[in-house]
Amino acid sequence: MKAAVIGSPISHSLSPFIFDFISEEQNYPIEYLSFEVTPSECKDFIYSKAHDDNFLGLNVTLPLKELSLEAIYYASKEVKSIGALNLLHFKEHKIYGYNTDIVGIMKTLEDKNFLVEGKNCLLLGAGGSAKAVAYVLGTLKALNVLIFNRSEKRDELVLQFSALFPHTIWSSTSKIEYEQTLKEPFDLMINTIPLGMTGKDSGVEFFNSLKVLKFNKEALAFDLIYTPEQTSFLNLADSLGLKTVGGLGMLIDQALATWKVWIGDLKNEKELHHKLKVFLNSILNSRLNHEPIYLTGFMGVGKSTVGFELAKLLKRKFVDVDKLIESRTFLTISEIFSEKGEAYFRSLEKEIILELSGVQDIVVALGGGALIDDISFKTISKSGVLIYLCALEDTLMERITNQEQSKYQERPIMAHLSLSEKKQKIKELLSLRKERYQKAKITIQTDDLNARNVAYEIVSFLCKIKSSEKRG
Ligand code: NDP
Image 1 (spheres, rainbow, N blue to C red):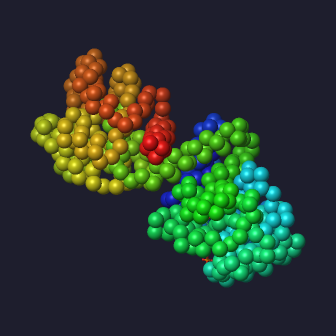
Image 2: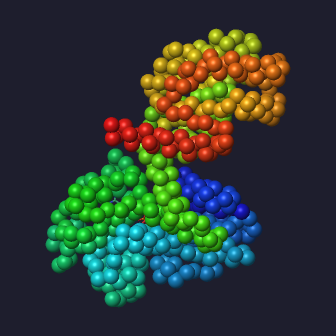
Image 3: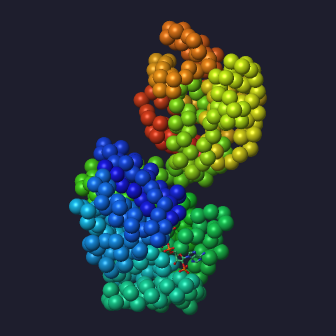
C-alpha cells in the first residue's frame, strides 16, 4: 500500500523518514512518498489519489491544511470546529478528514502531567497549529487564554474559540508587556511562532521580551517547533526556571495517530515512540553539522547507494567521485584505467577530493582505493568525517558479482579474472587498504543491512560522536 505527504515546500518534511521507520518497526510494508502540491493543484491531486486503490491516504501540510477541506466527504468533529486538517483517509474512494495535531498536543500535555483545567495560558501565534492548540485548551477547560500575534488573525481566533468554548475567557494582544499579563501569573505558555530554528531567525530578541511576564512556579513552556532540539524559546523558558517540552514528541504522536487511522493497531507504541524520538533527534542534530561526510570501503560494499540515502536523510548533496571523474573526462573508469593507467586516475581523484574538501553539506562516496594516496587521506581526515563501510569477503564477492551482472561491466581492477582469482584479489587489496580504512571515525558492518538502514546507523553514530564531543 502507499501513502504520502503533500504540501509546498515539501522537501523539508520528516514524514517519509518517520513512516518508513514505523513501517519497518511494525513489519507492515507501506511505500511512503512526498509530493510538492500547490494550492491550485490541491483538490484534483487529492481526488486522483483517492481513486487510486493503492493509496491509504495523505498527510497534509502547509499551505493546504484549510484548502483540502473542500475535497472531503467527511470531517471529524475537530476538523469541523477548527476548519483545518492534516490527515486524509481514503475508504471506498471517499475522503475522510482528521486533525491529528490535536492528539499530539493533548498527548504532550498528558505526558508532562499538566492539567489545563482552570489554568491561565498564553498562546504565541495565531496560525493553523495555534488553532489546534486553542481547541485543546478549550476542550480541556482552560480558565484564560491570551493569544499573542502580530497580525489581526489573533482577533479572529478569539471570536472563533469564544463561540466554541464559552467557559474559557479568550483575549488577544499584539504586544508583550507587563500590563498585558493577566491578573494572575501564567501556568502554561505554548509557542507556535516559527522562530528560533536558525541563526538568522533566532527570535532571541522576541522571546526575551517574554521576560517581563509573570509565571507560576510549576508553569510549563511548550514549543511546537522541534528543530533544533533546544530552541530560543526553550532557552528563554529555561532561564525563567519553567518546565519545558519541545515539539518532537507531538510530531511523533500525530504520526502514530495517523498510522492508527490508516492501518489500525500499533504494536509496542511506547517503545516505538522512544525509538522514533532517538532516531529523529539523531537526524536533526546531524543536520546541524556541515562538514563533508566521506564514505570509504571496498568496491561493491554499497558506498553509492548508502551515500544517496544518507544525503536524503541529512538534506545534503551527494557526490560520487568515480561518477564525477567520468563526467569530467567523458571516459568510463574502465577506459581511464586501460587507456591512461591507474596513476592518471589517482591524480584526478586526488584533485577532486581536494576540491570537495572545501564544500559544506555534502556526502561523498570515495573510490575503494582513494585513501591509499597520502595527500588524499590527509585532506579527507582533516576536512570531514570519514566512515568505513565494511563487509565480509564473501559478501563483497557476492555484491561485486551481482553488480557486474546487472551492469554488464567488470570492475577495472577485476577485469578478465576468474572467480577464484577475483577472490584472491579481494583478499590482497583488502589487506593492503585495511589499515587506512580502519582509521575511519565510524565503522559500519553492512553485511546484514540494507542501504537505508546503513544510513540510519551512520546518523545515529554521528549523533553519539557529537554528544560525546560536547560532553568532553
Ligand atoms: P502558520 O504559518 O499557519 O502560522 C505561523 C504563525 O507564526 C502566525 O501566527 C504568524 O503570525 C506567526 N509568525 C510567523 N513569523 C513570525 C515572526 N517573524 N514574528 C512574529 N510572528 C510570526 O504555521 P503553523 O501554525 O501551521 O505552524 C507553525 C509552526 O509549528 C511551524 O514551524 C511548524 O513546523 C510547527 N508545527 C509543529 C508541529 C509538531 O508536530 N511539533 C505540528 C504543526 C506545526 P502572522 O499572522 O502575523 O503572520
